[in-house]
Length: 344
Image (cartoon, rainbow, N blue to C red):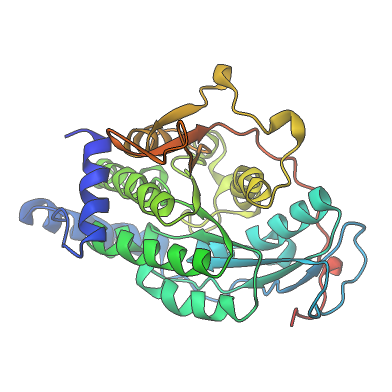
């Protein structure tokens, strides 16, 4: 079965409340559990908490002030799991939330108020509570990174995708722009060995493609994280991943942030004029959403967002989607002194 067809089935099951595809057969599931236990023993149980990065980040690096109603600051919230929270680094400025906040501040030439509601160990089902907290901050844009823990805990793909779609829908209904970093390719993680690596790679990509469909249907935009760290990790595993060889290092989070920032900027209308239009020579184009999602899942850093063809959102093969290969952002140097105590 093609990845596009599988993604459509998972997304359809999520939309109609079905169980979706079975996770794994009995024998393969048993093997997965055994190999997963060995990988977890190697990785160990994550300890500690990510450094707190909530605050106001400015263009010039000066201290921020608490955000007041009517402030010109852009309000950014991070949702999802440890990859959104920044587990594995020691300083706030190394977390993806702070990197994105500082990047946005530079692009917009305005302060950015960051609230990080992401939680270590979170699954897609936990997004509902996080969205409730996020909406209390009246954000302009939300960045969600989720899916890895759903794979690790063998959550049914349709259930995982349904929760994500509902979270995006709630945020969009409140007028919040949403960018989702899809499930990463867990086959790039060194402690996961064959044959488990092949299984989780396939499942990760199928889940990522289905996530994209659900996100587009709910009005958000998605960025494939895929094997974003795969080639870099193979060349320099001690640099891109932290001591547990599972969570990214500071350099790894910088790479993830550089992939996400252009899409976050685009969601807020901050795309440079030279990069506003799709570029055919880079492989940008309009496709049925399932086809676009399948292609993006195998091509890390690719953005998929909804679009229209001839004024229509849907064609014979479903929702139209725009596939974009945006240029990676150049992130500014970040200093933790740029953070205020906390946004209100």
